[in-house]
Image 1 (cartoon, rainbow, N blue to C red):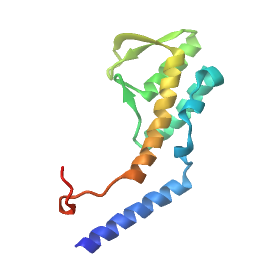
Image 2 (image 1 turned 60 degrees about the vertical axis):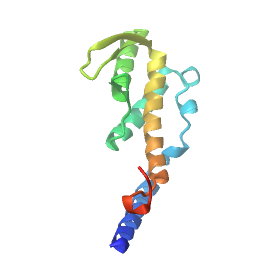
Image 3 (image 1 turned 135 degrees about the horizontal axis):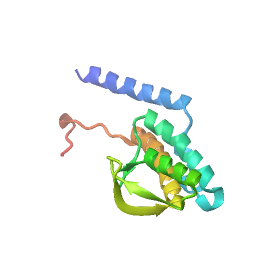
Image 4 (image 1 turned 45 degrees about the horizontal axis):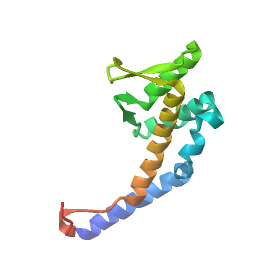
Length: 140
């Protein structure tokens, strides 16, 4: 039984390794550099956010904070840029405003950092997971 379990774990690790080898290495992305609104501008940061958030959604690891998904931040910031607004409203999961307003610079930075962090944390979780079962002697 233990040998079947070990074989299953080894095959799972190999499949994870093979799938990450063909993909872009997201662990090397620098959030501060990629999402710096002052250096890159709001438009470039929001494009970066949209690029990486699409991948995060595909991997089913999209971030959500204050009841707003990263994609909602991206859409609201793009709409504000189109309309010339300087702030966006924070909304809950039902798209009702919570009363808070944030600048488009903050929203662009937040959506970009959420998108990249979701991908980097996904990779870190695959590399740093620990095998634990009741028979291993770990206490829960």
